[in-house]
Picture (cartoon, rainbow, N blue to C red):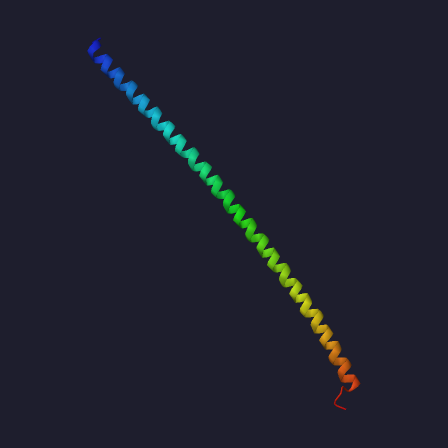
Length: 92
């Protein structure tokens, strides 16, 4: 076995293994960073959705209050007109 052939081949193999290991670590780190970023974006998106839902619920509640107020006012107006029409009003 020729030592001059084995040593450089071993060094090249070792260097390739070290390069592969560093590339693998970098890839795993990149994936971890991407997952952390995706999770943060998902949390932010969920927060925006939650805020949008709360705003929508508030607006729907406000609309329900306005609809109820309209209904009450319409009933009062109808009652007023009914009273006014049956009493003859001030027209004589």
